[in-house]
Image (cartoon, rainbow, N blue to C red; front, side, top):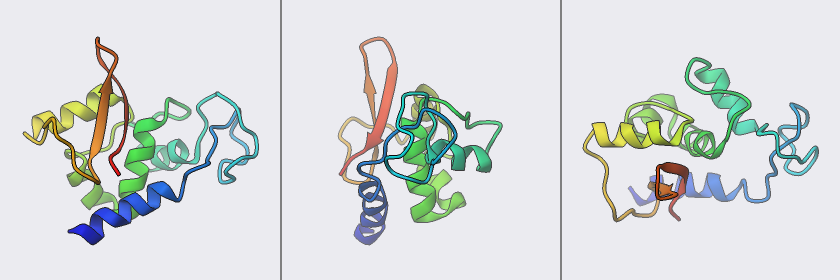
Length: 128
């Protein structure tokens, strides 16, 4: 299992330095067209897979996690590992884990982690 975890972590680490874009241009370039309008290749690619669930452009932390998992494990396996489906809304993604009794408070390397602002889950990432 360790090699599988390493795969998703390596994919995520390979994206370090990628900048959010101000428009739908240069999504595959790490630094061109930098801005804060929520355009990313992660959102684009996940929207192509599941347009009814994955918005584009949209806040993209959850789309990034889903993207890393589907790159590492393929669509079907990634969905299973992520609680049963993809979702770009962090409270909904967290609920997927809760519905599968896969929610716990001591994450391990390779797990999706969620952060709260005291009111609701608002951010997600990968434990490495």
